[in-house]
Length: 459
Image (tube, rainbow, N blue to C red; front, side):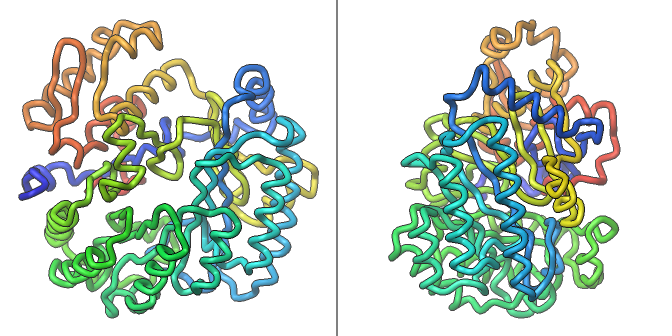
């Protein structure tokens, strides 16, 4: 196969595991971490990191209708007037944030996620961006992206997004097959998506991403092959290809999916294998962790040049930086801490009404956490470890500190996923497709806790 990985290997590593948008992962956050801890982290940032740019994430939770596969934090409503109230509270949250670190900080990355950010009207989007620009400085050359439901935008709306400063779009497609779309309650004709992507190119967006999901109800290897052919014809700059994780006990919308209509494990593996062949055969670069990009896209260039980074939004070309998270359920990172806002609108609004930041849980990283984060991110982003650089950065002896992990790596080397040398480790071409499994070797929490059912499967 063109992707140089066997079906046997895919089957062997079809196990649950984290996506490592952070380490430790969000399931390790504790309620003992609260607003006071976050403010302390901000104060420490004022001392040592003020000149470094920030990343901003803004969560817009509203959707007009529910997609049955969805595991995101969202509020299903057709009452668009609820957005105005939410934006008022967002402004209040920003006001409290800048009280602690000051106005005008440089921002090199902004992402509007959801939910459906395009649930907001043009005027509301303008108000949101005006509020952000009053409090932060969006620097030239940054990544400014927004998630788009094709059912909620027109070419005129795309022009508005460009005028507001967004230079990257991510379209939620999932599958072009009408029967699959109906089964997951997300019907959107392919020609609608094609027209919007063409319009985005004419307008001048730097990068257009398309999200796909395999493993949805009524999907078959044959039907998904047709979707892949359409995607290759569409030729977006980036593609995110996710495996559907059916966890109805955790995510209520998934209870509406008929379990008997889900493809078998063998069919899911066949879809993944065919996807790798089709996309790489069409000229896409496998960036890692479900992500593909055209060779000319900034993400593929960053991988070639060793400048790839990873944060709560996935892979990024921007240097590793602190992340300010705004909105209900949003997760941020300041220095050696992670924090998460309240998960319901009621809790979120109540905290802000009391003049408090709506942080309900988080984590202060230990020295071991920071060390393992460095190792895992090096594997996920650069595909290699240079032991000496880790030793100098964290004042350890790598081979003695990670003796257990090196034994596990030796087993992966026998399977062709990594190559080991005296000075370091390198992920092989087949290993990139299973990079989560390689990173998991260094996850201390997984070594202690073998209950991995809360994670989606690697495949």
